[in-house]
Length: 296
View 1 (cartoon, rainbow, N blue to C red):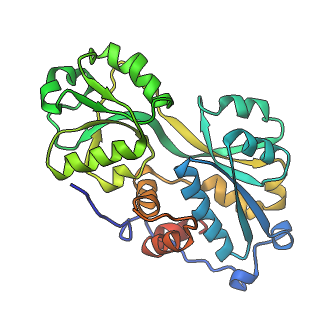
View 2: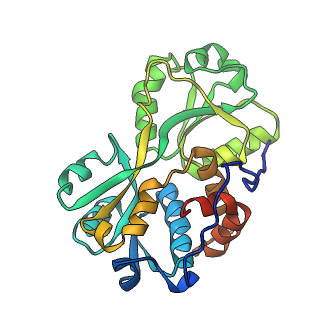
């Protein structure tokens, strides 16, 4: 069953609506007011980073900044931030996925902290499934049609499932189907609509957690690794050039439910979208109290 919910009523306490003097005409004090052009690097194919980048693009534009999103693979984005061509990026995963990049460019970038601590690989099932842990899945094979639905054959999640999850939890009898992420999501949608049990390989953050009633199976043996954190990193000197923006980004936190909701609005569509501005703007309007709190 699909679930639809907005976060407009999210209670985050009393938020003071502090408008900057001159509104969009004043981008802050010091260097902020003089240098208002900011470039955000966005990793190709990483939706959580794209979602956060669009969010901050619109927030900063409302504060009077000119913001550009530049897309590239992870390595070139780290290189561009380190070289000063990009000002920041919002999708550095630690302590594992991007550790080598942080080490390589550590002298020329600044890690200003994590904004989400729930990035991880998962095996997900329907929320009302009769099991809660991977060590129960083999015993319930018949209830899942002996099928585990995966994504692309070359994905890291696929390798982890093949090399660790399946042998550790005795799932060799399952038909492990790998083809593509869209095919996995189509199977998930079909099975849930029919009220049937389904097991899929997935990851957090992903919009499916907002769109569907699903749950992660516990992984007591740690076969899929620990959760990682998603970090914002900036070029050296960004904090001096943009002190107010740097403070906002340093304080930025986005829990998974909020992130899932934004991703669901952006990506859970049958239409081809090349510019998410209108979609993100509508989501921001629905979640104004939370958005306003990011720069209060």
